[in-house]
Length: 235
Ligand code: FE
Image (cartoon, rainbow, N blue to C red):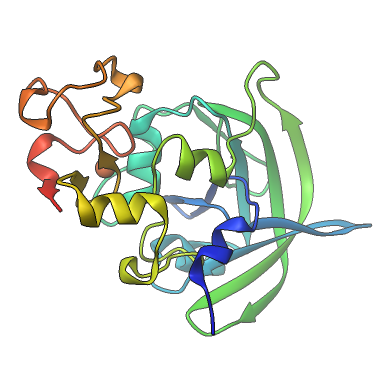
């Protein structure tokens, strides 16, 4: 028997993976970025085949990734993590530069970056596993801590989007958060699955503990993805 809660005990960071082919830039938030060898330094990323970025990476033969910091803005995670490049220009208003491989490298809210040239690609079913050799890398901001997937889940109350390799169907979860959603009347963002708990308020937006969902200001938005109140449903 598989207990899906064990999957959340595997540690990950959160990264902004990006690529560019001709004039088309693409990027998404990934937790599955990992170093596979040190000589030469190679990194692997697991990318859903439906992901617009997968296609761009395949065509360009390169990708970059930036290590997201703990105070990454909700707009950045919302746009890159929960929306598609097919719908919006994710790079509008974001600080980035073009690396040696041609990939756009995001520097906003990030700790470090790597620019990689693809050396191998493996088809692993729903996802493509791209292996790339890092040809350049540098630090961006040492004053911020790298964002871990655990912090994102436990503190920011974020969930993996459907295309993520680590996505798990809600009914399979039996965590405290999921139980609270089922037992209490909580409000959940339909875009990113963040849960608003009135008991805790929303410290990120300065909402006091004890504030009911109904009493949130009209211009309050989801602290994870930036969706407005109408995107929330009572569970
Ligand atoms: Fe949200």
